[in-house]
Image (cartoon, protein in one colour):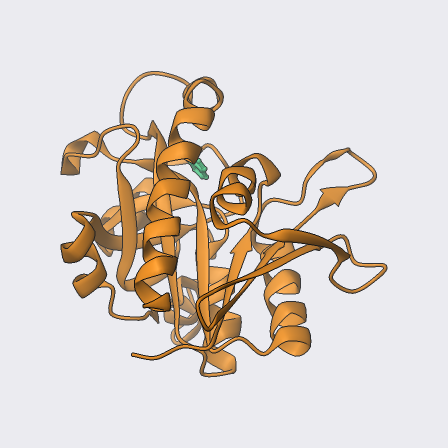
Length: 237
Ligand code: ADE
């Protein structure tokens, strides 16, 4: 498939930095003032590459992580830049029970769901889970030896028993905080979308998620950057 303009949408600045360096992108300032999104751009052969982070929250001085900022970022990026493919690189939790290890990189396929939008009313229950289909990443996964799986999005770094029950019910293998929101907006505009997620922590072990996440953030971000750069070069051929 031939794409001319790819947008990379990323929540966490520390996860974006190695990708920005790896692709040689330049910082262009805020995507649309007064919104906090930071815009970077570059080219590879004839492919335009835009990267937009969700920026910092002024009030709490942290990255704008989670579903709300991801929706605002995606809608603004589409409005301003009109990409023909959207990719969401990031880090995530994996599951020992399905053979995940720290530093594994997964591509979303076949879909992305929400695990903490529980609305037990007929019709709304399925709407809450979302089940957004994404770009068929199986060829790329095979080319680069990456895993594929159902990604599950929620607003929290930790989890409740109910979250885990729901993730298990639809066969989710990656837990993170943005992909389903980006998938929703991309689907509204019929723009193909997929997520690339590097595993920083294992949800079903006994170490607190935040400890494992912080310990492995740098190495997982390097693994993420390596694969994203390869994927971009694959589309730029
Ligand atoms: N980002 C990295 N690890 C995560 C986890 N376990 N849950 C949600 N977001 C994450």
